[in-house]
Image (cartoon, rainbow, N blue to C red; front, top):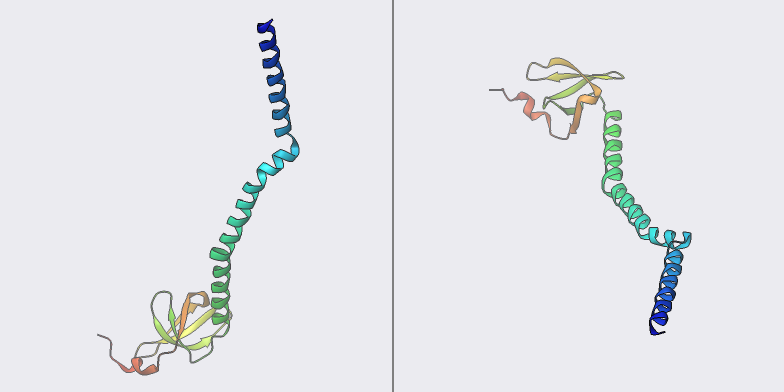
Length: 128
């Protein structure tokens, strides 16, 4: 009789454990388990936006504004490191006066790295 009683207790425990397992596998429990993962993904997307995407958009906008505001007489530096003075502008190209002899040079507008605030004193110095 003792053996039958132990068997019945084991069967009852197994049935209770199976019921708990089925309750844990319910759709509501599955969704609750996914909330931390989804929250982590949302936080990572927000971090990437504020650390990578937003600063790059600001930098691109500043470069676009700088290229749109070029005017004759501006002293610029090209992406190749050439300094010159803007003598002419077209939609997609810039004409520069380079060196002491004011040698004309035509470059693509996207090739302008920056507009320099330096005075034109360096143009009179002889290059060695």
